[in-house]
Amino acid sequence: MNERPHVVCPHCNTTNSIPAERLADAPLCGKCKQRLFTAHPVELDESSFQRHIGSNDIPVLVDFWAPWCGPCRMMALAFEQAAAELEPAIRLAKLNTEDEQAIGSHHGIRSIPTMVLFWKGQEIARQSGAMMAGDIVRWARANTGELHAA
Ligand SMILES: [Zn+2]
Image (cartoon, rainbow, N blue to C red; front, side):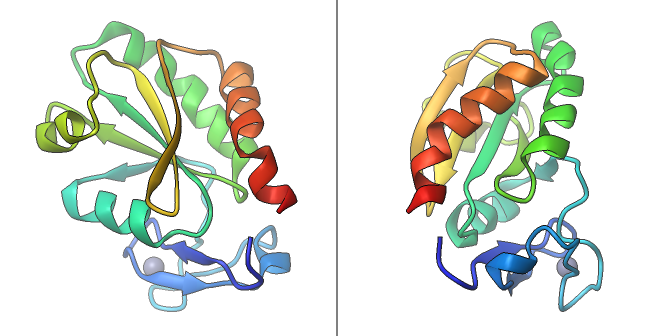
């Protein structure tokens, strides 16, 4: 990771440049002054999805889900808990595939829930099926370990 990684604000979608050593100090957005990390997944729509996937220097883990999907609703709390553990190393986000069908089909989402891990605009891993919080955290760390070591 570079020394001043770009972090997209979950509230106003402004791209902030934060010294890497300050990421864990509850940094605020330079524009809206709200916290860049809130221990909650960011709800994305089409425009914020492009911004978060394309402009974040930290990896972004997206939960593709839908309101009618029982396993997705079961996993929602686990995903919340995982956000609290994985921030600020990884941004967690949710994409409602019923509201944003074009994004789901563009990324080849055939079953939900599916988690896709993005880094610098590229998919680096994906996993389908509901998971417990601990498994989400372990899976995300296992797939981003070399990024942080680099
Ligand atoms: Zn902001």
